[in-house]
Image (cartoon, rainbow, N blue to C red; front, side, top):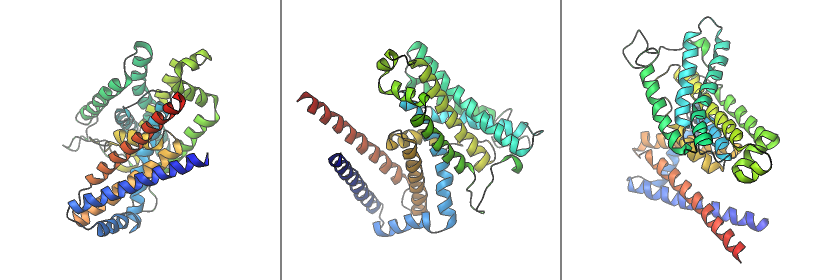
Length: 345
């Protein structure tokens, strides 16, 4: 056990070292000093309250969409549709917040978040039913559903949800009483971060401490063995897909109610796709998703600071994230091959 931990620590240290060296090379290629870039990077995160809080603003939807992907991945349901589920959840929550004006603000907020969860879950169920009943790859179906959801929102903000007082394709602004409370003003941080953290705890409890969580993990580990032990594979795929889509839908609701305060195109910032990377980095663990999402958000905030102050492309961070994912997947591949060789001996 100690040997395995030491080997894992060495591998992680090697990945960090490779990443740091690559980052330094890329910064130099951009014509800047790595030391100065590093200073600007951390200054953007810790230099003022606004930058520090912005990390958690950006991390909130990433945590929720990452959690959704992790739940689905546990059953072997490869949900690549968090982006579309985010859009559907955002659309449903915005409709509730804008149209149920006869209800008090706090009630509307709760209903809007619940609507995001329900419609995001239903959107994911489409792919789950195709997989469970027809054996069609959920990867293809969820990717196609992403484009459909994005275009449905685009139609909505140009037709029945367009602000009648404006000419831009976006909805009217949601009343302040029906939006998530912002604390530590003038920063943008809102209580959505607490919703995300609560979701992490609930998903961890579900997966680790309940029979339902055990069945979900059993199906993901070995479908045939699970079925032989009386565990319904179809039922658990459907449950995990619905929960996965629902969490992504909540992410959309939180972004609408806490940050944008209206519905508009491109609202997700592609966090639904980023969620897949976060889930891979976190090895499907809820606590890992929380840490990876905050780390990714911090990288984004720091990179934007470097770009503003020094003209260094913020896209460098996306390159580094992709490289880290490849290194981790490569490490896992070599570990699997090494294990097979040992078994062969």
